[in-house]
Length: 479
Image 1 (tube, helix red, strand yellow):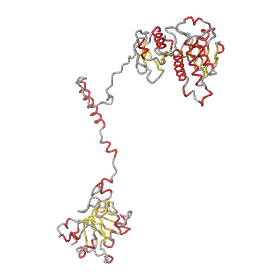
Image 2 (cartoon, rainbow, N blue to C red):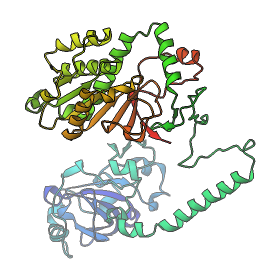
Image 3 (cartoon, rainbow, N blue to C red):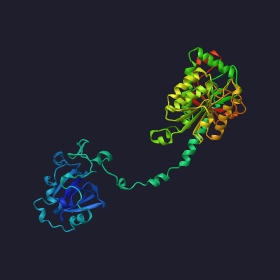
Image 4 (spheres, one colour):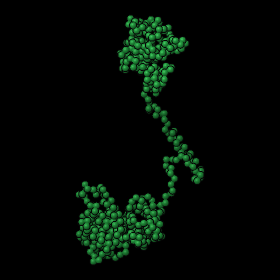
């Protein structure tokens, strides 16, 4: 009768020391009272040997998890009595030829080597004991739902890997070997070939009939209109053109058209005082950047306050320079303003000078009172567009000589037009609204926005779109 239990899946509890074993019955020796399991599991872990033999004296409890194929032809009564989870001692057919009963197994003396020595040397007890540990790979009996096996919850391996866990899962994955199987050059060549075929296909189809479903990495998905770089056109050109950092073309205009533009702005409410204030803010902002910006002007660096000298003449450009100096003084810059004494001055100069003196800055009328040591920046406002005889005045020549000898960089505000030689060589020049055709000695050209509306430009025949973008001062490059 022992042969009918071959192939059954059982769980054997060998006490707390040896632990729990599960496996398929491969042989039963009734004479020596031993049982062998093939493909055994010890405390839920597959054993490294294919078969383990147990002695009856070592078995404390034995439970049948699934009957073998030899039991398929038994009658219904026997099948009903052999449900999974019953102990083997509960089955009467096992008693005559099977293992000894629980109360008589202590008297059994196995003739073969007991599993006790084998288990102690090969499978030390490392896990829980008793019925708490069951086979993680044992197949579920029929009639039991997927969430439990033999009246217990399914373990993680059973839910994810199925009935039997492959031994290959315990092996270390060879990343280098698998990476060597990837042929990078072949994949890249396939991608390049598909891109070349796609380009050839697009070139054969006319542009109007071309429908592109895939885009290359350098192609723009959104359709955009072509950029128009000439957005300013004037009825008269000054002979030069500049372009901005974004490539927009800015033409120069003659001085006569420039005067007409300022006169039209005056009629529409952009008065001289408003232009002076705007020009002073823009020029001081540029000067602060040239002086070092936040790296030079901060509360922790008061011992290195920059010094700026203003060279102003008795005209509109001089008033612009004084307005710039007032804003610089408000930003903790040491400002020295040179303005010669005259019996009669323009009202704009008088007003700007009155505001400038309220800042506590110095105003001198003699070149000998200017600093002897080099300063940080010189702002040149000596020249005038209409009065060309100023250069013959002694005060003008003395101020120009001082600026050339001081070796400080020079910023010119609204310099005159087409002068082949400047009395004071400038490093930068700042123009208003639209640039004038300046000489090469004017240095690098910058343009500031003084707030002239677009309709004022259109009134004098200039088609205008602002080139300033997000800034009030932009650099101009020679075309």
